[in-house]
Image (cartoon, rainbow, N blue to C red; front, side, top):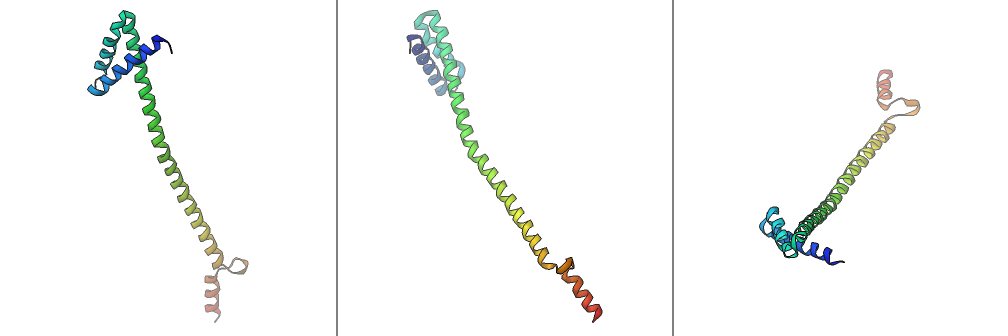
Length: 121
């Protein structure tokens, strides 16, 4: 890593530390620029760029963490939906089996057979 990159990273981290402590992004950027001012005018621009880079990295890490938290939740939700769907399919199959058991030969139901028996005596 070159001296310029190390300088950007160091001043960016100084700015991020100040921003995290104070809760103000503007103060963090100002601190980074102030730290970079020891390296002249180009150092100030490099420090501002370093602060932006550190800020982007922090945002990316936070987004990745949130995606990691959401994925197990999403997977659990999908698994629950599949489980409920399987239960409903099993319930439908059980109802069909019960209906098959209530029917007799040639599709006549037990209820119609009982009615016919009562009427015929």
